[in-house]
Length: 336
Image (cartoon, rainbow, N blue to C red; front, side, top):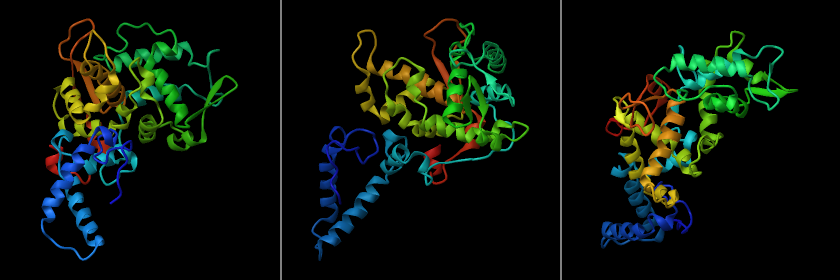
């Protein structure tokens, strides 16, 4: 069995370096293996290796409380294989019926505005003002309980950040191209949406590009914390398991911190808040709202309909989550 280097990712799947995670626990595991084999005799080192492989395979497949029932092996797959971890998670490439999600609502606003002559951009390369204002109005109607635009007048693309992100996302996905101050639909996009511009078929592509190419830290002023994005599939697992009813946002924050306490080390020192509080705010904004809500997989609402900032929020899964994401090899106990 190859030896894990001190600075390599820990095999347990926590995302920490081995020296800051299970290096000390390795001695415990070795002691358990020694106890397991007891006084057995082996004919060769190969026999010892085979016994060790079997022992540690079983050990790594055991459910871990801190991972909410996932094993180290399963967590490692979510963190490091991601979209290629088909034995754990699968996505519906095409779904019948209308998909309700902010990302698609805003994608439709942009795509429907592009004709054969393209869509003229502003001198700074942004979407035209009228499109931004019309999109904001439709968004407010569709998501009347959402307070993202409650305190903002939209005069330019950056005033409506979800629209701005969607513009970038369409470029990253190769669905629009820019030429001579205009944007056009690419052949790739036209092939997917057809003449009727049916955009539901874009959802799976936009989801994957948003998770893998777009930098979520672009949305806010928190530390980079790329691991929040790397561990996004674990958050999907949490929502699949617990999202059948409204729960406080802090319910998910605490379970995330329980699984990955090392992320607190990256929050730095501040006198006015604890690392746990700052991580909670970042996780809530960037992952629960910026990812799950934007993708239409969850709805987030204030616990109490009071005005002002600093409110406590609650979250639950939307039907699109179960429709789009499947966990084919997780047990009922792991998902409930």
